Length: 249
Image (cartoon, rainbow, N blue to C red; front, side):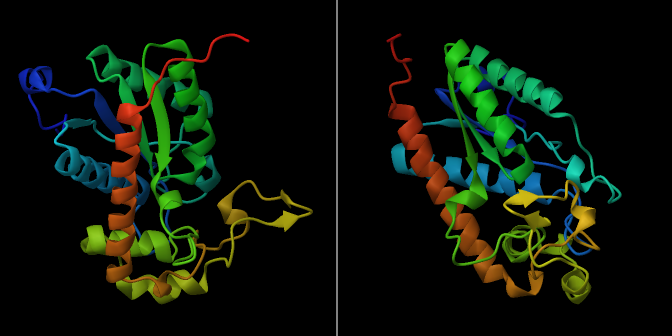
């Protein structure tokens, strides 16, 4: 059930214990891909994974509206990027999860589309699980696909392929050469295992990392399908898992 499209009475009648909450970012993805890449892909994977789970099990899942702004100050030099502090983000996500749980959707999977959110989401879900009656886990969709099939980058082949499949009208194919020419080969500026750069503008002229020309629509469809299948399997495990906390030793 799509919570944003349902009435409150429909939501009240939903026979569901599970909810998914897409979480992303509004940030630059080079000159060719939209600022909303991270929440658009998270939304799509959340919706498709929930649909597959419902088809496979006959059980209902509530799909919450996406959180579109995350921890993204590393892209602040590129116009249109939005960000909040980590403590603000953690509080907002936690309170959203707790509001879902207040309606009986006690088990929540956060479907994440932005690498900068990962650490904060792990902390949030641990706090929810330890200090409420609910259970929550984070799922970063691009970590669930074959890492050898495509390079992640930033606005690189993985994200560009997914967007080309999901929202082809938002990908500027005529700018792919520009994106590749002004992009970086890898993320960061490394020395002795330390990333010396805090902002992406320090190592990428136009914000791109990786060559988006290496992706295509067929690859995007495969990536999204694989991520949705992985989410469906995760939902099945979350639904059946004993969420009681271990006893004090």
